[in-house]
Image (cartoon, rainbow, N blue to C red; front, side, top):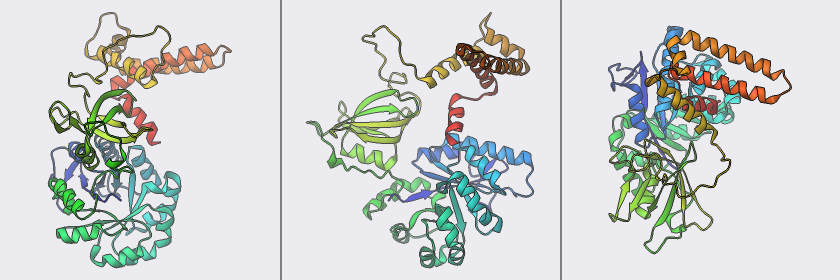
Length: 431
């Protein structure tokens, strides 16, 4: 099982600060800090809202929620939110903002009482709990076993007692620890990972710690593969071709090759590594351009001689600057073509965004932008009413036409308010 190093990002008044007791800035921009964690193969990120939950105003809570939403959109890591939780509605808002989990504070009776409700509503895998010591684990053992996926242990002094008491995997919060003790801790089956200052202050040393972990038979922040390199059928040069596909749009981006070193590096870093046949060496995709490919899944074909890699692509996949390497059309048969719905929406939306940036005389879209938000909202309301009227008529085509008009005006509103289709689809997926 992969063991995790989980950084903590502490939010206070819209800033990332060093710790709950040290409110000095940890970085100029909390979103960029979260992005950097994700780019360094962080699987999970703990985000703490340090504001006084009771004293914070509704506006302050909403501003913090908006910041957490931006953090979730910027990082590749699963965000686990802590702090700012008073009731089930707060948990719902955090999960709808994109958080992969929430951390309930078991030093507060109100959080213990929330556990069953939020677990049944949002899924046990999204609920974690923080406890200080073994006696709290024993006291809540039945609730933890039924409704919580993992526990964050904040006081590891009685670690052995806590390991025995916890019915679920443990994250251990550590200030500092020797490397030998760290490896010993990570070798425990029930320990899922470590967090705290030991991670935040030594984050740049993660590659070295990963190497040390491998020497001790422990995979740290890597991807656990079902198939070893020996399971693949290689070509004469000992390589396996890799077809790379965008996980979101399903577009084929490129084809490359892996050797064993590239395969192992991909699993260890979470970024696609390949073997360059022309240069005769391994290369990390995006190392020069910044256009990294983050692994979403790796799948072998029926003969295990080709890998299908689904990735999150940053920027362009092709060295020419094109999104995909496949753009030289060779032949096309005339006839209807199946359209990718999301691509259709994005293509139309890009035209609307271009009109906003580069106005065109006589454009209806620019007319709406010039008239402003109230006009856009008025048209959107009119189109919604037209859908209702059309739905009462026997001809279903009228509904189709009116929905199309509504979606167009909705995209004008999205462009006006700076909302992308990716944000909308992510929001729907999170629900």
